[in-house]
Amino acid sequence: MHAYDQSIIDQPAGTGVIGPFVRIQANGNEDGFNFDSANIPGNPLDVKPGPWTKLLAVADLQPIEIEGTLYYQFRLDINETSSKSLLSLDKLILYGSTESDLHDYNPVTGTFQGGSAVEIYNLDAGEDRSIGLDYALHSGSGESDLAVFIPVSAFAGSTYVYLYSEFGTLTTGDGRDWSSDDGYEEWYSFSKPATPQFGSISATKWLDSNGDGSIEGDSVLTGWTFHFTGTDGDGTAIDISITDGGPGDADNTLNGTVVLAGLKAGAVVHVEEVLQSGYYQTLGANGYDETISAGENASYDFANAQFGQVIATKYLDDEGDGDITGDAVLTNPPWSFTLSYTQDGVDVVHTVQDGGPGDADGVVNGTVVFDDLLKVGTEYHIEEVQQPGWTPTLGANGYDGSIGTSGEVDYFNFANTPDSEPPPPPKDFVKVIDVDVDISIDLTMDTEPSLYSDVYVNHGYSVEVDLSGNDATFNIDAEALGDDSSVELNLAVLTTADLSSIIATGYVVVA
Image 1 (cartoon, rainbow, N blue to C red):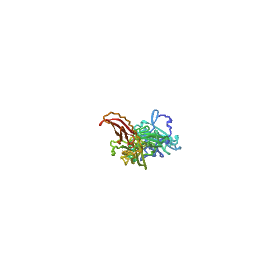
Image 2 (image 1 turned 180 degrees about the horizontal axis):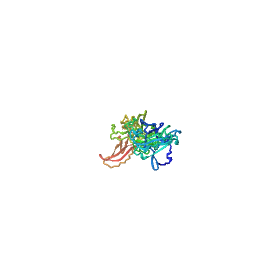
Image 3 (image 1 turned 90 degrees about the vertical axis):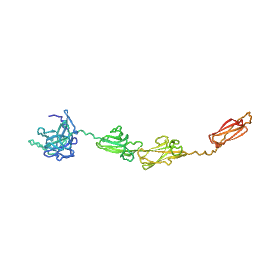
Image 4 (image 1 turned 135 degrees about the vertical axis):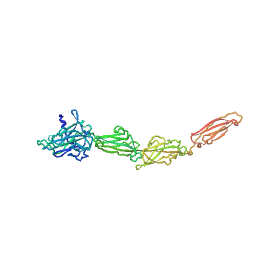
């Protein structure tokens, strides 16, 4: 016999604090065993099926240490009247088993149907015993009237505990009545503290290749960020952004899914994506709201498609044949292109100059890039903005196209050749050209010397020369000559019949 600390014995019962696993009730004598209430046996004896009668798992039991030994404790709460408070416990047998559906216990043979069990403790082992209980000592439902401690080691190899008990058969011959005649008798155990059943909410990002809002056949997009807001089950505010595979992502993997875990039951959470440049939403655009129950793992899908690009390039068509092979791009002057389309019921027209606002590459390079505008399925028209002095040789009427898949890039070439230069318009002005050639000739020759002129004009205009004695007069049509032109004038003297010498050279410049 051991003397234990009374505080161990005097612990509160009550179904709101303890874990009942079998309830028995009958007048006179009564007996019963615990079983899974979801599978009520054909002969439950005097057991009251319900949430208070259930299968008892060894793993759920909370051990208690007494004098260095661990025990599982099983408590009895009896209910008798104050006028007849006595009740006998006449049989108490605990079994261990790996079977979860033992039923129809036979008190005579000590066997179950549905499988086998190992006897762990028997009150009558060695001799017939009864325990007299007095309800008056611990009156009221919810107080322990008996505590039974079985070493934890006795349950080695067992998964479930089955307890059979019988009451009210004791006869002492002294006139005391040990039968049952009032409320139920209830066995309960102390279970381990319940492990909090945390929930989670996950968001998965998909690339919607055809922009239809369905993720069937699509692949995930990795590296996206989701924003979670709301209130946890304990009232704590939730406001956190988590990036796929980054801090706070419970799966800690770059896999297209972000998991916010550790949510308490009753958490109310809103999740939405953080939109990235170049994409638009096709699924989950408004985010999702979820109330998390204990252990729930809610999951939601988000899908995005990438805007298409339209790229227009301008070439200088040297030969004017519409073939741009070997031709250079035109950057001076910078050209502009107009993109027209109807999207989401709105007519849109964008005109962008090479290197100007709206040109996604931001460089004057002969190419205009239209980006972040066109969704999958949008039809469009692209054309150049004509400039005077140029004739289109390729793409004169523009091009029609449509974005077929997410992120599609469409390229279009345009070519122009410069118009031929027209003759200069008539000049309405007067130029004064003063050519002063002052030459003194004193030669002794066998023949009479004479002057002549040789005139070269860079524009091919003729110059009249008047020779009179030793004077030469050059007549130049300044208006016909034009601006920024020059005339070379050479004056020579004839010394022999076939030999001459240049004696003066001058230039006339029309500035």
